[in-house]
Length: 212
Image (cartoon, rainbow, N blue to C red; front, side, top):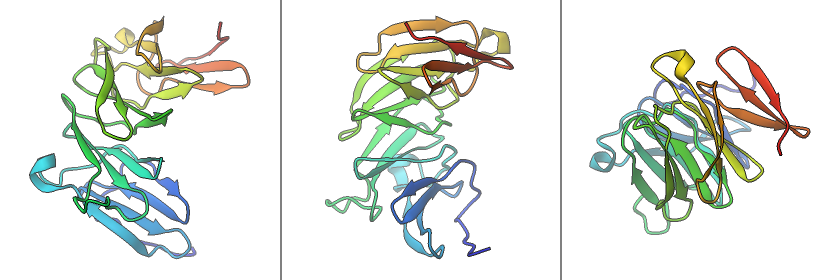
């Protein structure tokens, strides 16, 4: 063991690598950057009070892109922090806060200046990475619990049906949100691209699909 470090609360999701640091959110409502060489705390940010209904809990892991850390709160809030300091130049502590309609458990996906995340309000959102503004949203018909994935110009998401057999996987045009695929299986994490295939995850079955 090279080092060990303690988060402020239980860690429920994956870490994100950010240069010389690793970044994690925890169930105490803190986002922390640890120096990966020795585990020391580089910065730690607490969810900003009433803006996020108190410190709350981070269930999904962070995504790092464009100099920011994007992470979603279980109370439906999402924040963007400065990657290197946990602050933003204005000193407000967060670059933006976006209120979604219900719980958010998944880690965000980021591509082409958009941040993709689903919510328990049965909608899937594409947020502007710079401003947090909703660029488009999609009515998934059921809760979205797992993380999305972007393969080429399509973003994939799965729905958490009340009955497992009701789960679906959707493929949406990543820029516009137009539905380009509906697949009759899915529940959590939807798909990855592997050497010319889209490998889709159902409840118990994997599917290798050839993109058209």
